[in-house]
Length: 335
Ligand code: AMP
Image (cartoon, rainbow, N blue to C red):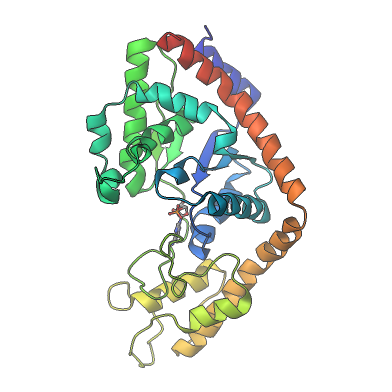
């Protein structure tokens, strides 16, 4: 049997940088919110950490899906991860690293239906509906496998993911107690603050790729004229005073969002007094921020075999890194 503590040592010897793991769900098209809140910070992490970034296509199967759309979304997101400059990272598609699904099954054998049914997201997304997929109940076990396979010591999680990381820790410790010390229970840390972008049409909710009914969500690949139109239609308010352009999250959520967006894209609202001027400044800043990404995306879209090769190499490394952990868990549980 593989000694799991030797694994840790081996890991530390081969890399002095901490591991960082993040999976994106290939559901829907990526938005400006995904870029400013996740992809840009992920690119910035690459210097300090040994980053594994994946597309969680198995997770995308937990709700009704169309196979052709899923395939197209994975291809678009894979190209996007390269276009935003994540080429220093290990990039992979989750289903190409079978250890994820394999470890998930072993962890299902220490998880209970009771604890999974109590997870807030499961309750919200449709518990026990006639057509609720069983995989929606177990997807948090898959998420635990995603994390535990890479043995990160810390996992940055937002508030909505805290309960999920707690489950990961519980499963790791329960498995270790029952079958021997295979897993490291990672600690939750506060994520680096990325920008939080609100919907342009409904500024009290997050700009999101699922349910982005176009108007309020700027897509990462929207051409400049579409960005211009969406920003021009963004909700503001009827305040026309001299200090109308200011942050006030409660009273002026739309304007606050535009000011935040402008700053996140390197601009400033200082000296702007009208909403028209603010929207023009936001449009210019967003278009300028997205331009290099879109240019690189267009180049990469012409060489899909390059993108495929990068992801094939990434999956190979992910398989190599995760194999000893899966082997240790498999042996410990008695298979
Ligand atoms: P999701 O699109 O919800 O699957 O989220 C993928 C990643 O993008 C997560 O790290 C989110 O925190 C981030 N993200 C999604 N929407 C936004 C947003 N509107 N503002 C900032 N970050 C976001």
